Image 1 (cartoon, helix red, strand yellow):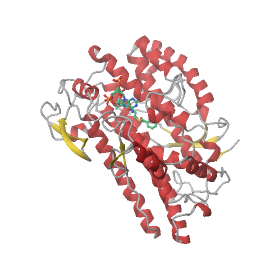
Image 2: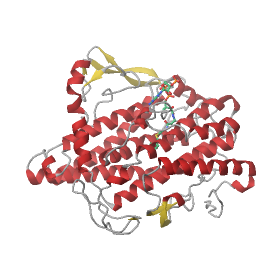
Image 3: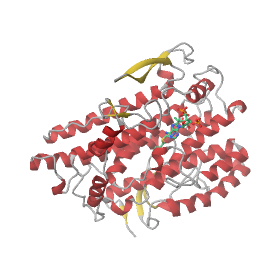
Image 4: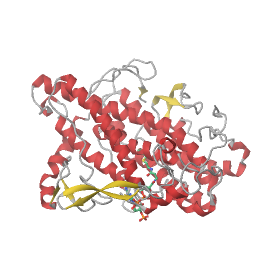
Length: 472
Ligand code: BYC
């Protein structure tokens, strides 16, 4: 277990002080990062003191430290999971060879592209969420937002370290670009589409941390399998942070669902808008939107890029080493969906090209488990409603179903029919305005907005009404 050296300007557990050139390059990037945080990070938050956890070592339990911290003083740094002795490449054409400690020259550009795509999402999410603090439902939630934000900032550091340490000059240029693209910017947008959509209300934030951060979990898990050991070690540590973000999402949506179900039960109607709650059918619309844009994040159903990343040993499958096959996929087949007449059917494709689809399936199953838990909350409150994940063909912009139109149940329909129903299936402007109208900042200690139930417990042994953020 390695601990982190906090005495350095850039906290790290990679002996940064032994490599003066790298240290100087990263110290040059640091002020640009802090400027970016000031400009694009959480609005008007620099003076708040926030009850934040900081990693003190990189073991899964290394989360000992909780303190009141001003966010610009958060100790962003470079933390890799401990090196495994004799780690091997576990899949693809190099299976069985020693894991790479340096970038394999022939795969340099593919590897850089994967790291840049991953890195681009991290600051993007901070940008997307930058105004949310102004409408928080409680100090507890405000703290969760800020914790997520500072950790996304650290995930950016993680990818920037890889670019600086292993890719020389073009890596440094890519690291600079990560601060120059911005979410939703017309000229220089973020790379993946779902990261250009603003997160304007807290229901969207909770959906984001449930659905979009879960894409992070599955992508990082696949990259954690990488034969390029520094990437694997970086992602393994990031995953421990990512788990908390999904906790924020699952409990966040769960608490909204709980409150909405209570109000529905109490007033014997699903139309709880007049009582200041978010109707369950409206929550379903938010889910339809977020789930469908996140499915796009997995790429095309069949992809030669994904096949190449796999064969090269750069990006594996979810829990690669637990899968019982030859980890080369030379002859295996996998089911991918396609439209056949009026039905979505499952066709066979070479498993090697269907890597994205397999990960999307793993992701969908994981989402479903969360939705099942939300439905239990609804049932327990005695309300009559069931939340359902839409069909994977619904509202897709990448892959087989791009340009086609489907109902949430997966029935193909015309564009006209889709347009007519769009606002019954996904948030309309009026829905968004209504939800935003509920988002009035609640920042008194122990108070909670009316549209969300309080959490069942506080953070790190503190009460729910602890002053998690001291506003200044
Ligand atoms: N948007 O061969 P295909 C996270 C492009 S989230 C726009 O299927 P591939 C986080 C694609 O680039 C995790 N373009 O693509 C969460 C390709 O372009 P070219 C982020 C897209 O490469 C919350 C073409 O379409 N990490 O950490 O197999 C908060 C053909 O597609 C999209 C990663 O994504 C799209 N959605 O798959 C904070 C991991 N999809 O070659 C953080 C790294 C595809 O024609 N990225 N295209 O120019 C990857 O592994 C892959 O790039 C993707 C795409 C899975 C995203």
